[in-house]
Image (tube, rainbow, N blue to C red; front, top):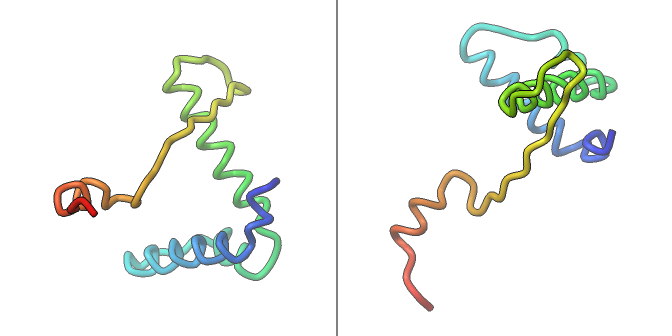
Length: 89
C-alpha cells in the first residue's frame, strides 16, 4: 500500500490521534502497535472503512463495494479565513 511509504508522516498522524485519545482517557492498541511495528494493518483497515463509507454515500450496495472521493484542499481548514483577510499583491 502506497500510504505506508509515507512512514514518518503516517507515524505523526497516528501519534496525534493517540494523543487526542489520551485526552479523553482512551487508547487503541492497534494505534500503539502501529507506532512500533508494521502500520499496514491499521492503514488498510482505515482505508477499507473509508472506501465502504464512500460507496454507501454513493448508493452502492454490498459488502465488497468500495469508492474513493477526491477533494481539492488549499490552506487546510483556513481557506475561508484567508479569503476574508487576503489582500492583492
